[in-house]
Image (tube, rainbow, N blue to C red):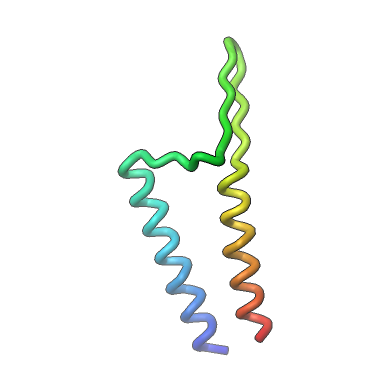
Amino acid sequence: MGRMLILIGVILVIIGGLMLLGERIDYKNPLDFRWEGKNTTIYFPLGTSILISIVLSLLLYLFRK
């Protein structure tokens, strides 16, 4: 149980580091949609939602084992 928590923590640190690196180089996920009108902006993070879903599914799968 303790090893699993450490592994999850390391994975989260790596993902956080990649997100910070992506912000620094101004990376935008191509599956995140943004529509800008005259007075409105609509942002739909489809790609980010899929990525978070995959990561959480893998973590829950590993945690159940």
